[in-house]
Image (cartoon, rainbow, N blue to C red):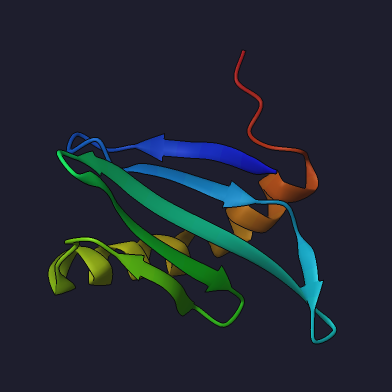
Length: 90
């Protein structure tokens, strides 16, 4: 399951996964995606390794660095909200 996190002005939407176990560690995938004329630009970063597991389309290096910072700065929140079944908005 993927949960919504935020949508940026360039239409990039950020979603995150449930917690899953890989190599004995709790992991989460944080996915960034924006629509284009020919499909989508996508990047997926795995927690806790911060490894990029998907990179398709035309996100540039500056955008990728921004996404890495978002994931690093929000890692605790991603784990918290994944445990709670997503962000609860009234």
